[in-house]
Structures are given as C-alpha cells and as structure tokens.
Length: 165
Image (cartoon, rainbow, N blue to C red):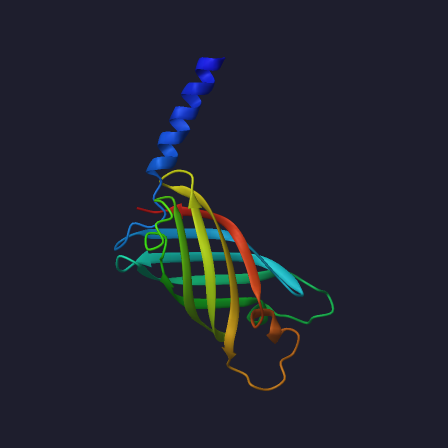
C-alpha cells in the first residue's frame, strides 16, 4: 500500500508541475461556471484567446436562471454578452506555471465593467477558476428596473476551466 501511495504522489506531482495556466500567444481557454448575485443566479461561459505574452481577448456570456419571482425578467433581461480584455499576470508575479491571475475590462450589451479572476490548473487541460465582476458605467443613466439591475451589479462566479490547445 505504501508503494502505491508513493507512486500516486509522484504521478500527481508530475501532472501538477506540467500544468500551464497561461502560455501566451495562441493560448485558448474555455470556462463554464455558476454566477451568483443579488436577485438571481445563473450560468456563465467564457472563451479567452492569448494575443501576447501577458494579454488575452475573449467573449463571455451569461444567463440568469434563478430570478426571484417578484422580478418580471424576460430573455433580454436575463442574457448578457461581453467582449473582454485580460492582463494575464501569473508569470509577472511568478506564481508558478499552473496559476494565473487576470484583471480585465469588459464591454457588454448592458454596461462597461471590470473583472478580476484567478485560475488554478491541475493538469494541462483542466482547472478551476473564480472571478468577480462589477460594472463601472451602465448604458441607462436613469432609474433601472429590478430586471435591468440583473446585469448591472457585483457578480461572483466560479467553475471549471479547460485548455483548448
């Protein structure tokens, strides 16, 4: 049993050492996760493409599934699509090959905002991520309805991340 435990530890250690959180230009990441916010929770999908040593561009889409019954929210209120820019700083802070942190900006159908995320890879192709996001400026300066506020607030999300390369 002791030999099996030592062998398992060695195999996992090698796979952790080879995991790459961000490799630079041409690196493709896909994330799927859950988002949590006031008055609802939902699903978020993100795709990021490495454009340089420390930055990537991508798209993010979210749909709020669990909206409180008191809020009259149709598809347009529940759905959002964002173009995003990330500064991938894991290598800058020398966090190791399997860790990346990425502050960024996003331009969505509902607002202009920012996000801060982190990724941890267990293998070359699979890891976990977490991200917080908040709007800096919304397109409607007037009084927002409860449904319009769904994508104009602080959001926390977490889930799985996959390397596509």
